[in-house]
Amino acid sequence: MRQVRVHGPGDVRVDDIADPQPGPADALVRVAACGICGTDLTYIRQGGIAGPGPEPLCLGHEMSGTVEWVGTEVVGFRPGDRVVAQPGSGDLPRIGSGAPEGALTPLMHITHADRRLHGVPDEIPLDVAAFTEPLAVGMHAVDQADVQHGDGVAVFGCGPIGLAAIATLVDRGNERVVAIEPSAVRRELALNLGAQAALDPTSTDVWDELASLHGTSPFMFGPTPATAAFIEASGVDQVITDVLNHGAFGARLSVVALHYAPIKTSFLMMLMKELTVRGSFEYPPRFADALDLLERSDLSSLITHRFDLDAFDAALDVLGGSKDCGKVLVTIDPSQW
Image: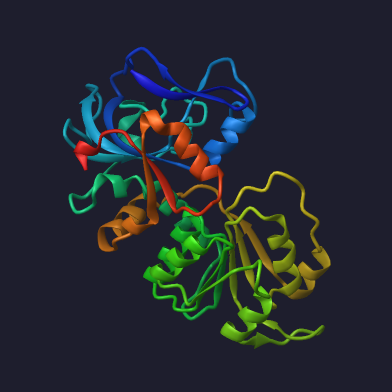
């Protein structure tokens, strides 16, 4: 059986491995599709979660598929069920980040199946269902920003997580969502989702534009854009500094992108503006909500690239290259869609 595994820094391969040996609480899922993301690129660059480990790291945590086998202790699922797997689940090791499971393989071993698996409604194609995990991440980022009806919201970064946040905001009736993204392809995706505007930060004064779109709010050092909530999904350190410097009194910032280095922060400005800054990690408990949104809204346009498992290197090149992409999907078994 083939599986994508990381052997060391920059060393990722499609290996031939032994068939899985599941236990009584486990399941085997025939994988239909699996997305790849920036976290996967980080694991490849580092050679593992935080560097090389004793065994190769199995990649893939944005999956969909069909149950092929269940153990005797599994009560909620049966062979033939269409499912997605929730990577993070309480005290369980996270799929695709240290556990033996990884979804970039034809047949995936799911431990503790009743706690990990979620049924996929028939109305959702299984390739689209693979977007459940990033959509849940974006949903949680919106919740962490405490967005209220009528708020002006700015989403920095329109990769899959930023786009998932925009889809969530629009679905909840927020009409004043502004996307900030250098890629023209991703800006167009944001507008197609219903964003009020999409700004190119390389050619536009973002803060002047936000003031024009959302109005201004008074502050002792001069007016600021009245944007009430910010979602940082770009991974650009300067965004956090700029939000603290230019954000409105009482604004909220949700940080869902990965920032690996310390960022210079004005706690004086945070104090004077009474800003709220929250991290947003994973999706508790958003998987059911994400599936509900996928059932009600067609988000298939966010999947812009599809590659066979044997072309995994080409998929990585797209994701790590120009960034002119939405979700990059590895198609394992399209016959299930």
